[in-house]
Image (cartoon, rainbow, N blue to C red):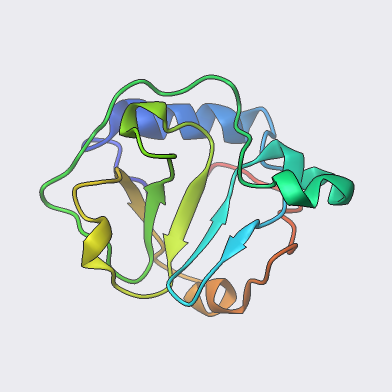
Amino acid sequence: QLFQKEAPQSVEHMLALVKRSFYRGQRFHRVTPMLVQVGDPQSRDMSRRGYWGNGNSGNPIGVFELSKKRSHVRGAVGLAHSGNPLGADSQFYIMKGATSSLDGKHAIVGQVIAGMAVVDKIEVTDMIKNTGVK
């Protein structure tokens, strides 16, 4: 479930990436007990594994759509960035557990409403085979 009303530009950016198959073939490059992260096109190339997590689509969203109604609960989908929320682009994460320390620092753009058991099983190098929009 995406939060279109709360993060319209961020959600539109992500949907545009999905529609052009940007995420197809990418691998999850970060897996911790609290989250899984994906969205670096370099992750398609196993020989570049040392650089995974540094790439993006090259078109930052340029806004920080912070919702005071949303927090980093289990299943929350947020936009990753390297310190400046205005630089968020294609990388996103899914929370495997609640982490209030991220609240106010990252835009939350959605919530997993089905399939958390799959998220819990994701490992580094697991690949997104296909994406789509309903």
